[in-house]
Image (cartoon, rainbow, N blue to C red):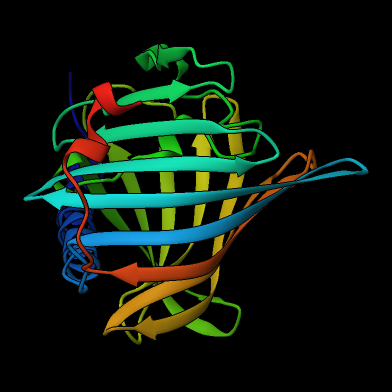
Length: 245
């Protein structure tokens, strides 16, 4: 089989551009990953779930703690019903998650259920886990403005494990490398949009006080408002064990 010279030249021109895009994408995400984070977090939030004409408010407390690159978090829903949710995230592995229903039953969330609705909201169980930079491949897609902010546009694809999303495109603010938007793609296409705003600096940590997850098909959205948050306070290891549910 003969390969035309112009086709070969096109390949040689494209390959360096792709390598640059991958390298720059990774560099952008490394700067995002290097932003200051707390060792522990305690907070009170309100989630508003909007579907059609209905609106439901859910209030919950959230506690999280880092163990090196591992993270454990627990959310306790206080209204309208009491539900407990525990998540253990570890680099290179699918997260382990359990939910305790209001009746007292504790159920482990299977990997195949990570695309399920989290407590009836537009967030998936997959969205409720910590993410490690090394679990994904990245590609720089260019620059774009989001709500008047200059951003880097980066594609993110999970390397292995459960893949609810085919890819995610994140928008990283150039001024401080904080992520302010994400587009989520599943097998059926672009399904959800995450928007982060009301960003404040608390104890030197950039903190979003409002997080919105919207469906692109118009079937509603869920908004999390962070009412209170404290960083680097004492958190009991026992509280973050499965046996404590």
